[in-house]
Amino acid sequence: MRTWQVERRKRTRHLIELGGLVAKAGIVELTADDRAIIYGAFLWIAEKLQSEDAEGARVRWAQKGKDALRGQV
Image 1 (cartoon, rainbow, N blue to C red):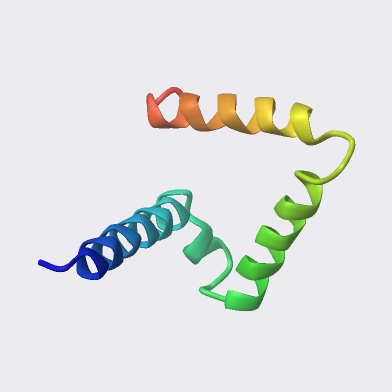
Image 2 (image 1 turned 120 degrees about the horizontal axis):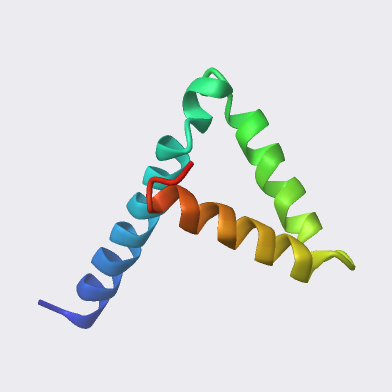
């Protein structure tokens, strides 16, 4: 298999995993699969991560995600 094929498969797997997180969080159902809402939410997250409260947001969101993945939410 060529290097570009391996890299493409790794990228595809990564994107599928990220999409799985969107589905697992219930975002698809909560937004009625409205891509504009989902994209807007991601843009809001990106803005937050560029703000003065970026580190606080990272800490809060990381803890919330870890708890959810452990089934504590």
